[in-house]
Length: 240
Image (cartoon, rainbow, N blue to C red; front, top):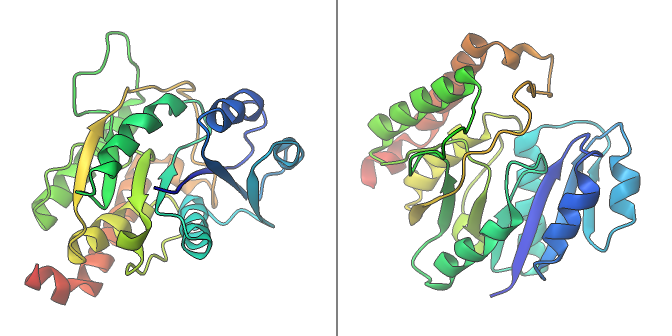
């Protein structure tokens, strides 16, 4: 089972030296997608034994994932595991995800920070929790899923399974498009519990004009993307 670990990065110079070495120690091929960083990120990545895709300017979180999927397809990987570079995802979780992948029962294994009761003292920005819970409930109602966390970036994707998807959402609303297509194309999905970790409670949404830092604006944007994709996939959703 040939596996690629893909890590979107944008101005993550602080966490790269330690976190990337922990990821490399897992023994899998690693790809960093540098989404137009303006700090020391590019130089630090250049000194590590991993692949790098560099965007000349910031294109968005979804664009980084789409680039990773295309690379995994071209290079013949069986699975691609995605994790963030902000120290909220622990590289050691990868083994459990790949155990699920090895069963060949799933196309998507999605991390969930809410599948079990968060550890005592775990903190999460209130607006992020509310937006996540709201959209998760709406997706479940509209698509018939039983998800508990629609925004966790720690996932394992079967490359052959996502090959048929037409993912174009470049920004943070990427999960809205992804979940609709995953259901429309009948991907086999399961959630796997991961720890709820927020290292920087003040971390902002750093793409675009900054308007997504307003929770109401963010929720409205996510809903528009969700509704638009449901409309696009309407015929497939009826047949599922």
